[in-house]
Length: 388
Image (tube, rainbow, N blue to C red; front, side, top):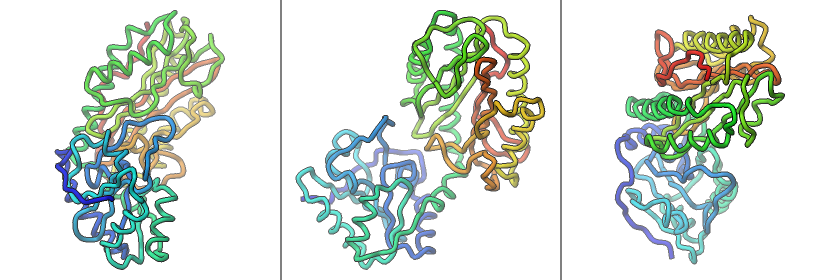
């Protein structure tokens, strides 16, 4: 049957104890008796508990719903780790109080026994993306405890980055800068987007990225091709007269990067040059607007205004950006509906585009950190127009 075991730490460099203290103080204020965090950016932020590499579709194993950590307003977390997770995802173990759930165990019984260690539980806090089965079981096993959504509470802690987090994000962004510099020579008529994207991912790993932070996009648009940016990758050979947009990122010490540029094949026409200049100017307008006290929607509006005023607003069809850190997309969003007030130390993307199928396609994306004089860019790669 499941048992307790203390394991050595698998992470270092981040002050998880101080982060947990702030979180636990908030649990006490909310009268939450126990909080459940499944493997996620939230759990890694609070404890250092590592996550699997991202994959398409669900990766499942016996007793998956029990996986994670139980945290109370005081004391150390209790980690519940099924055999199927620990066998391949925790080679170095995890520091602290660990309850192991073996494949042949009665998962409900082991989890009930673990919850019983917390005494009477009236309110249960849940982190984002908690399995519905986990929530239902916890309510049943506690005789009907009230559920509390802790997503906003954890996000409030995570959104302003510590210096050590910014260092990881700079290093993650630097890998994108290096990769972009080295991939440019691969962009040519006759080469496929698949070939280029494969080399992008190889270069990111070569330079120290753990794995891509999301699906790599390499997509050509322009007068020679009636194609939209919703198709992010094809096996068709590139031809002259197209702008090839890149969207990629990697992971360093758990922290994501998100980066984009556009390279033109052949001599750009006047429409492309105009669109490219507008996108760069729009990003700069957003950067200047991103100061402490401004709202996310105001940064979005400042960015959009440049493209709207030039008559291309119908072709800037997405939000300006999103916060970023342990997850590629974090809140707040740099978008029209988000009135969150920015604080110094928040990190986010500014990624304007003009995607006009059959006419022109341009995007530029960098990561920024909110500063009093305007956002500081975490990337160093040039935004100059490049044609090959």
